[in-house]
Length: 90
Image (cartoon, rainbow, N blue to C red):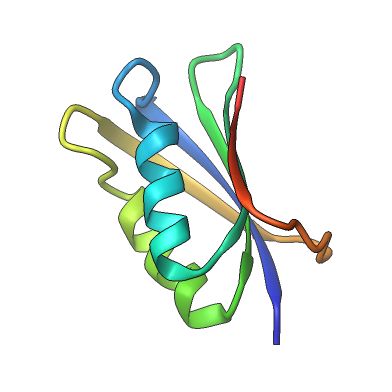
């Protein structure tokens, strides 16, 4: 059963390849959705797929790529949108 999760990641998460690394993780886990930078310096990830894969992505978000410093991750459920792929957005 497909689930939809929204992750809002705080810390030093822009300019450290967070979005690109998130896309690699999501694709490896078979998830669809997107990652985007926000004007306030945070990153938002919306992802869809099996609950177990979403939990693994959330765990990855709590540390991110090597150059990132994650201070906090907020996660929420949402309505399934049926994304076709995982993309990096501006």
